[in-house]
Image 1 (spheres, one colour):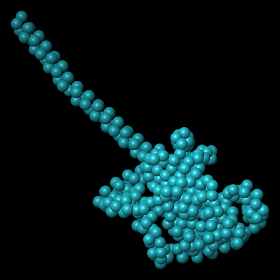
Image 2 (image 1 turned 180 degrees about the horizontal axis):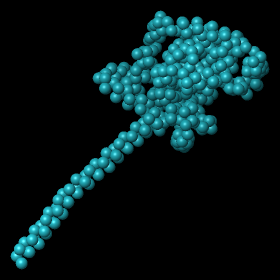
Image 3 (image 1 turned 120 degrees about the vertical axis):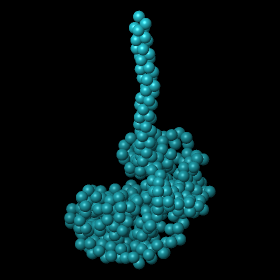
Image 4 (image 1 turned 90 degrees about the vertical axis):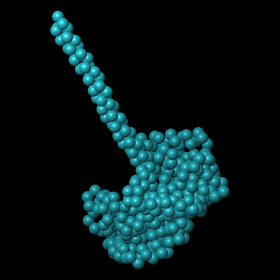
Length: 420
């Protein structure tokens, strides 16, 4: 009996020890599971935050930081100081709260699609804009084409300004306040100066400090729009500004048709374009091929053919020469994102590059297949590709370039100047 009791007690003790062992091991299993869950949640959290930064257009502030620090490059410290010393014009906007809410709603709706609905951009809202101490009545509206580019940041979105009455702001009646990344910071400014040096139309641009209803909105890229003030600033006679699709699409067509002088000019221009499209009139009798060649050469130099897209390109019909001159913009970032595009325009394009798709556009084809254009293009490419051309350009524009570069450093001290 005693022996059996001892055996029973031994079995009971063994079971107790087994339970204790299991209970000791169980927390480690649980900790392992919890650890995996936490790691997965952290990964998803970081991934989603990175996705949010990308779609809100804010990654440009973080990628340069990581790159510079990984290279032990602390030049941003100097750039930050230079940025704080930069003198920026101040634009103070006051708008009714209900109108601001409506704009925010339109922005949210636009973000549901890749492109901004034109109807959203047609809605205009009254506001007051005080620029360097002088107050103007204006109308505001959303602007841009790609939603993520212009409206991705919930706290900073691109908008257009129209000045009411007889006044102007910085000599402009219409302009846009864009998020700086939409134009590659300095890329468009450099391109406009190059075009102006070559005798083409350039647009007025600047970096401006903006506040809305007393709250700082940061630095915006101020870009001139298409009207007679743009033409006058380029010392040209007032003429028609238009887009080209299948037909001529002039700005302010109703006003042009109401005035006898411009009505005749518009009708002549439309008839000329119809003849060009039908093959009855050579393209060099409608386009100023010398100036088109200069633009194409600058586009190659900047490694970006995006400005030549018909959705971006505008034209000015010069009443003196009777020819259409290009007005280009949207040179974007100066980068090597599309190595295949680093070719001259007359070279064979790589498949599915912007160069390739541009050649499929009938309007562009009318230009680059023209023999007069080709002769001018070869001459202009030879000129702009010479080292002394760029050296002279940077020397002539050094002071203005330095001033505007410091303005960029105000918002992004990690910015790398394209020349470097």
